[in-house]
Length: 84
Image (spheres, one colour):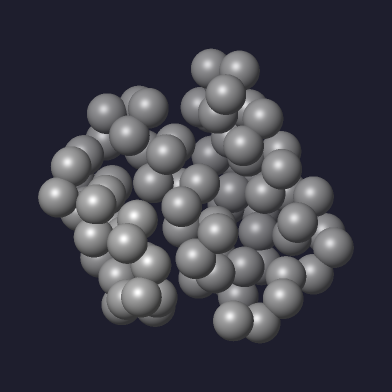
């Protein structure tokens, strides 16, 4: 998997922090500001799923889990997220 740019890594940390602090709107805004390549990265999809699960947007969460499975089928988390 290609490494993320420094700016995208910074934004992913912001997504994680905002999610953990219970600020889903800010977390979503940070995730939306990621580059398109970073939005397809498994680490990014993991955080997106966590954000959607926290806000109980299950239809969108399933779609993200499907993207994670398609892009990184060797990662068990995508399969577990979809099952959840």
